[in-house]
Image 1 (cartoon, one colour):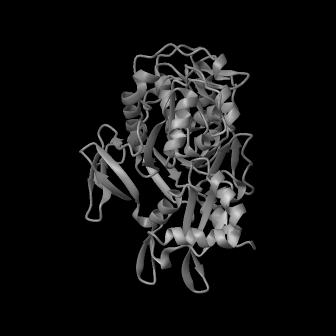
Image 2 (tube, helix red, strand yellow; image 1 turned 60 degrees about the vertical axis):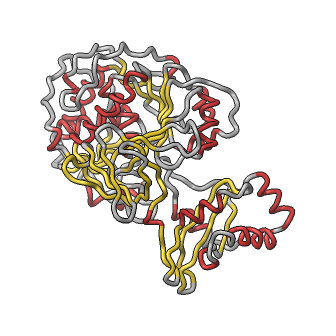
Length: 465
């Protein structure tokens, strides 16, 4: 547990990935920890060396890395990069999801928490190896080493996004420049997967380069998040987990708290501040862009602050365009995020324009419908999406009711409740844009990155209710 780990002595600077394994660190410097063990710098170097030797026995250039354990993930990542191989990071290591991506890699490097892929070369990562003499590692050519990540695939097949280690290294340096002095030599706990860009950077690569010890395993339950809190600990989390803290009342401080992967409701941010004596620092970005901006919700509607070095402008449709040293320092990147710029460094997000659909030639914003639903005091949260029904495109809505909403449903009955809901929506929305079908659910299904599981939502409307 993090409370049992003594923080490392603060290092002078954040180490580049190019020279990381040759950094002058104490052999007993703690890299990672779990409930019963901690892994030292000497052990990391030894385990990377052993894993490199294992990799060379396979004629594989594209190596997929999937682990539950973040220390083993770090060992595998460094071994792959120092072996001159391409690193493939599937976002999901469920057997069917891995099989779907099998054409993308030649070898699967995994730990005991991931099933080997049938009919495909696989190699488990073994740690705890002993090498009396630690080799000197080659300096990495960061711009020549590719990392392939995958979007969450919430609306279709996963999309491969290729980045170089140079882009990731640049972003790590920016993160340290913004928060390094505040975090000092804290230890890192996390509730998010290292298989995605946010977890990759915040819970593994940034701690490795800055010398902060990180937890091997995720905190999965609200009770764990509370019990692991300390002034020497930083929590890397997401809206999905922070929303689940709503019933927690005991207060335990963290040094800092980060959230990314989706919008964090203002009440959730304020409750987290009450629990942890820290407002969550929200990070806005994507697999394609990396980190774009950050904010803390001191007030409702707080604007986003661009990261240092990131430039922003709007196109003719009012969507954000970015130029960033960790996207492409020479070219602008077009997003589908509608924004209002309030200054050169601050902006307000207005929703994604790719969530605008046409029904009978009318443009309809799904974000607008969700906004109108969520502003009703009897609805906590909603998810609206389109569906093809009887050769006509229409809308479905899954809603999470507040206590007053549940009381209203019980008092009125389903028929009158839905009539009242549609009547409320008609004050703002044309009849054609009002969802035809609704489902009441306990919570909006999200993956570990806080992204909505659209296929799971859609399945609710395939059942008989």
